[in-house]
Amino acid sequence: MYFRILEDLERNGRQVISSAMLAKLGGTNSAQVRKDLSYFGNFGKRGRGYSVADLKETLRGILGLNRSWRVVLVGAGQLGSALFSYKDFNKHGFHVVAILDVDPAKVGKTWDGVTIRAFDKCEQVVRESGAEVAVIVTPSEAAQSAVDRLAKAGVRGFLNFAPCKLTVPESATVRNVNITIELEGLSYALQG
Amino acid sequence: MYFRILEDLERNGRQVISSAMLAKLGGTNSAQVRKDLSYFGNFGKRGRGYSVADLKETLRGILGLNRSWRVVLVGAGQLGSALFSYKDFNKHGFHVVAILDVDPAKVGKTWDGVTIRAFDKCEQVVRESGAEVAVIVTPSEAAQSAVDRLAKAGVRGFLNFAPCKLTVPESATVRNVNITIELEGLSYALQG
DNA sequence: CTCTGTGAACATCTTCACAGCT
DNA sequence: AGCTGTGAAGATGTTCACAGAG
Image (cartoon, rainbow over all chains, first blue to last red):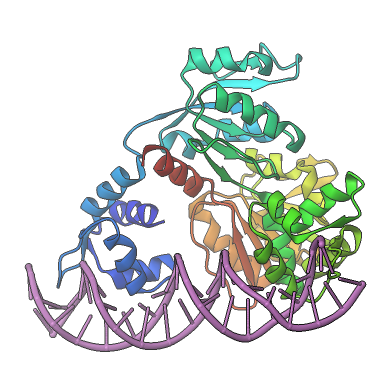
């Protein structure tokens, strides 16, 4: 969140920012901001605040955004298609190098130069493409078994859009984007 | 999360479930499950566990999922299109009754019976359609001003897919689905 | 005997408040 | 004087452990 705010600030030509101002932009308070940042080091200058450019670059390093990641898109449906052309994806260094789907009607088609491959060949596709991250946009029922095979093939990071819990090996990481749970939360907030 | 697990359990014919089992399925521990549920009431039977069907229906009521919500989709781009045809949306009682976009080339087109209207007419569209919830899939720059007008027009709930912070009146609720932040988190986890 | 519901203990997260650098 | 960095206090969240219901 701080990283994104700092990108904005830099675009607007701001050079220095106080914890109080960062807090206002982020919807927290100044003590929270200072504690958060101080966990990683002492980036501010007493009496002045934080250098926007320096802090942004520091956070970029911490977040690992100064390298790029090879992504395999698992599921070539409507959501997969929307994500494929989602420009923030590339902007953050995530590049889709392979697409998998079980549907024979989709296999062989090409999206912007990337050919859709049969999911059954996933081990080979992961090996050849060097994918380290998988974006899961399959139906819930298919998600866990897909993840099992991909993890075994060497994929270490999973961004899961299926509304279900995924189990992965210790060495791998899952992050969930669960639209269903957000809808339920919204429903609760609105009627409660 | 419990609600979704219980739906699954019921589909599989399970009638009773213990907090320990629910915890295993949800990735927590049994004390957590019991505390969570006991916040809303005493739903279990000592010595037996929780009735799957009863607990599911109780949670449905708590979450407010036994009514339906009228939704206005704000932004008729690729992601908007994918969400429009996302079936979980309807399954949770969220029905898209209106679509808004600023692009004159899109205005007037129809998606499955719902006509895309000019964003500039949003007050009128909200009034006519009775929309209570807005799904924001505009670019970040446009999101806040769109939300301001929609909130004033009577929209109380916002599901925000734009990677930015939204400010709304006290009486309204925002939930964020921030793909950008998940990507950054994944990047951090992978390189850290 | 099994499994819930819940105070009490423990752990983590947030805010306060101020010493100390610029 | 202004603002960070950080111990200490306060608030919130999680786990333990057990009384008591079925």
